[in-house]
Image (cartoon, rainbow, N blue to C red; front, side):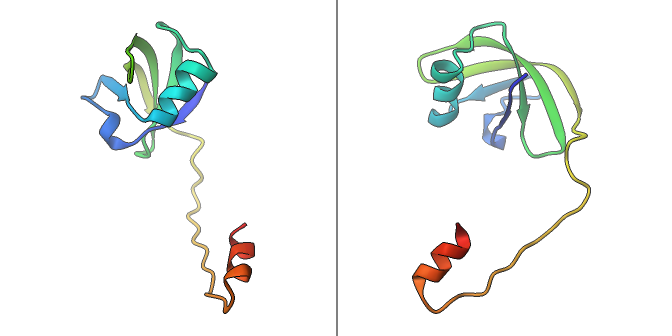
Length: 98
């Protein structure tokens, strides 16, 4: 089952989600060719994964309905922060970011 990250603005209420991001909508409808009735897992960054079913595909958005909400066990328990000092030349900074 495919998993997608969504923003908090995509949630209508606790049961329905609207996918209106152009990139995500294109990925789901044109690249993967999802149709009404297919199952998708949506992750909103709150620690839960939402198993949903596509109920409507419009011209610029997609509506999913919640089937099951469960705790996401795939999230790591360790929180890690990385820091990088500013380099003198922009080329070196670009290399570090790559």
